[in-house]
Length: 123
Image (cartoon, rainbow, N blue to C red; front, top):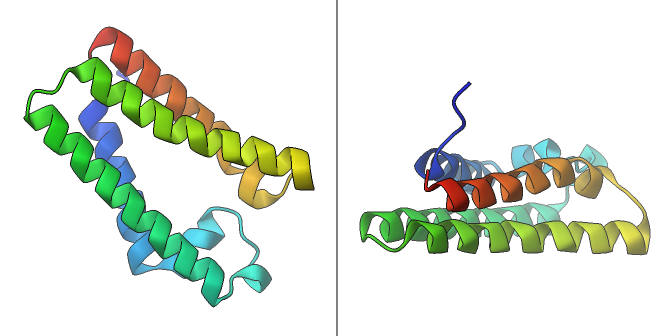
């Protein structure tokens, strides 16, 4: 099985961002927010998260196209996703696990590991 390269992972990041902006209600349910908790504020925050994902993805593609060192680009993405993981762990420690933290945390950690792998192999 061939693992995804940096561009493929970035396209997925942008797609998640687009979904979060275009359909924030769907995005928050996919992230594990119960329907009863999906209010306007949560949906607005999901849309803001989507804008962030699109911006990071666009900057990543631009950096790769401009010839920025591949390792630097991948480690920067690992840092962003790693910070998200830290925020989730802190929330779990403070408030206990919830679907919004416990469900995406393993995926986020796998994404961090993949960015580090890509940085090391140059993929």
